[in-house]
Amino acid sequence: MAKRAEGFAQTSNGRVLVRRGPRNHALLGTELFSFISSRALQRFESVPSRVLIEQADRELLEEVGSAKGWSMTDGHLSDRLRERGLAREDRLTVAGALLLTRPGDSLELRKCVIEVRRYRGEGVNYDRRQVFDGPLHDQVRDASRFISDELGTDLIVSGVYRYDLPRLPEVVVREAVANAVAHRSYEHDRSATIVELREDRVVVRSPGGLPEPVTVETMRAAQSARNPIIIEVLRSLSLAEDAGRGIDVMQDSMRDALLDAPAFEDSGTFVTVTLPLRGPITERERGWISELERTYAVEPHERLIMIHAARGEALTNALARDLLGTTDSTEARAVLQGLRDRQLLSQTGQRSAARYSLHPRLTTPAAYRLSQQELAQMVLEAARERDIVNADVRQITGLTGLEATKLLNQLVTTGQLLRTGVRRGARYSAFD
Image (cartoon, rainbow, N blue to C red):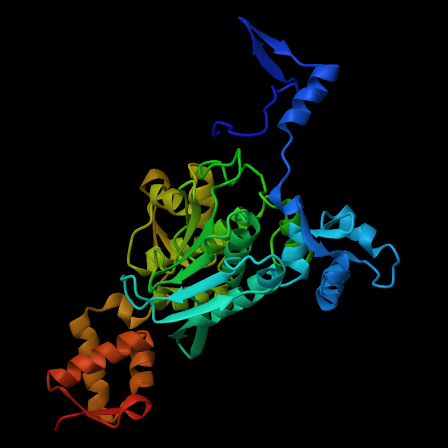
C-alpha cells in the first residue's frame, strides 16, 4: 500500500492513533471529531460551481434523471440533484456541471475533452485527430464508438465461414475510456485525456495519478474513486462497470479474446493504460479456434490448449498447467481428458508419460502445417488449373487476406504468376 499523503488511516479494529511522546494515543470523542474534521477532504467534483441549477441542459437532465428513475415533473428535482452530489444549494457542483452542461462553456475547462490521435508508425506525428467535448457521458459514448470503428475487425476465413473478430473488445475500449474520464483530475485544466491509436496497441492517458491508497500493484483488489459522483452516474447510464469490476472486466475480456494483458503505469502526473492489439496466437489461429467454438463448443479456457495442439505440440500436464494458469495437476488432467473424451485430442501413454495431440479427425489450415515454399506450390498448382483470386488462396491455404496478398505478390515478382487487373479485380494465372 502506498504511503498516504492526505486523509488518515485506521488500525484494523477501527481506532485512530496519533503519536504523543513515546506512545501511540487513541483518539476518542471530541478529540476524534476534531481530528477528522481537520483532515476531512472536500473532493473537487463536490465543490459548488457558478452554474445555477436552472442552467442545466434539459435534455441532459432527462437522460440522467431517466437512468436514476427520477420524475421530471417532480417538484423536488433539485433535492434529487443535491442528494446525488450534483448540486449544492442553488448551484450545480463541478460534477453536476461536467455532466449536465457543456463544461468547456459553463466551467471554461478547455482541456476537459478526449483527444484521439491515430498514428501510422512509431513517430510523434499523427495522421488523424478527433476531439470529443460536451458532457462527460457523451464524451465516453462517442469516443468509445469512434475508437472501435477506427480499429475495425480482422476478417478471418476458416473453411466456408467468415469471422469478423474485433481487434479489441468493445467492453475493454469503453471501460478504459470511462475510467480515464471518471478518475482523471479536473482541478488543473492543462491536459486533455489522450487516446493514441498505434498499429499494435491503444494507449489511454489521463491527467492525475491514481487516488490513494490505490497503486498499480493493488489496483485489481483496491478500490478508491477520485470522482465517485461522476463514476456513479456513468454506471447508471451503463457506461462503466459496477464498483470494483472495471479492471477485472478489462483483464478478463482481453484474456478471453486471446490478447495480451493490459498494462498500467502511474507516473504521479498521468495514469497510462496500454491495450495490446496482439496476443499469443495469430489471426489465422483466432479464426480456426472460432470454428472449433462454433462446431465443437470449445470453452474459453480450452482454446490455448487446442491452439498448441494444432501447432503440432505434444501436450503434457505441465504444459497444460502453464496454458491454463494453474498449479493444480488434477485440474489440468481433467481438461486434457475432457478434450480427449470429446475426440478433440488423442492420448498416448499413461500417468506421468501421458501425451496429448490433435485428434486425427480434426483438420487444421494448411498454413499451420506447411512451409512458405509448400504454400506457394499449392497456389501454383491451383493457378495451373484455372485463374485464381485472393479468396481462392485464402480458402486453399487458410491464410488471412493480407498474408494471401503478400504470397501472391511474391509469386508475381519472381515471375511465377501473371497478374491481370488491380485491387479487388486482380486475377492470377500460371505461365504456360
